[in-house]
Length: 318
Image (cartoon, rainbow, N blue to C red; front, side):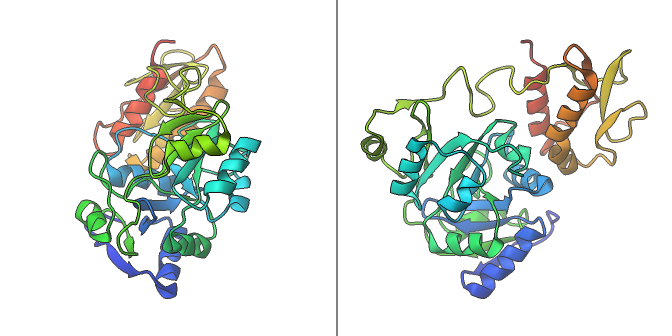
């Protein structure tokens, strides 16, 4: 939708949830309540829909997004559950707990959802409106908090509209959120608390029978920004290239006659964001492990900032 479009307020009844699900299937963004905060939902299998989430939030980089699903059975289709993960899911789902788990190969999620990781963050929300929307939609929803990046998280539909009016298709008004804090995020093997939230760490520790460490594993970062060089292709990467050097695979943006591949021939930043991880992998395969990739300049505005952040980290010395 264009920024000039208005954002619809949708009632949290069966007809409203059907309308919201139809918008999501069309690739639009819909905010909805969970027991923690309102989430900004988009089809987690649709590259353009996920790119629109980053654009709407003004998110400066491609951090992994939490995938929302209606139950444990649905979650098992996307990730591998260890015995510890099964134990936590049985105890706390549905509820304010997000688990970071190994992603199934071929799960079908947009690589923008996982930011190129081989893991995925999954939550089963308890809010009846969230549950109704997930079942009406019938698939995985990527849903960070429904607010501009860096701003206070929304716990009412009015909060969402105050920050995202005109940037998203609709908000399902399910009243105030009961918890009001984002979900707790836990990774396993070993158990680590990546983000404190609506589920007390002590309850998680009692369930697992072991203490939680805190923070990310520095040898296996789960979010962009934890290392200067991150998710880099095997080939070397050169940015802001006017033309390719001999033997380079050139990735273009907008008109670029010498480009082997293009993020967007029309210069559409949302299309470029949606294509980024796919095109980098394709360029890496063409260049080979000792090859070279170059990328033409990307505008440093809107979602272009997130694209450039990802490219700078991929091009960092390693």
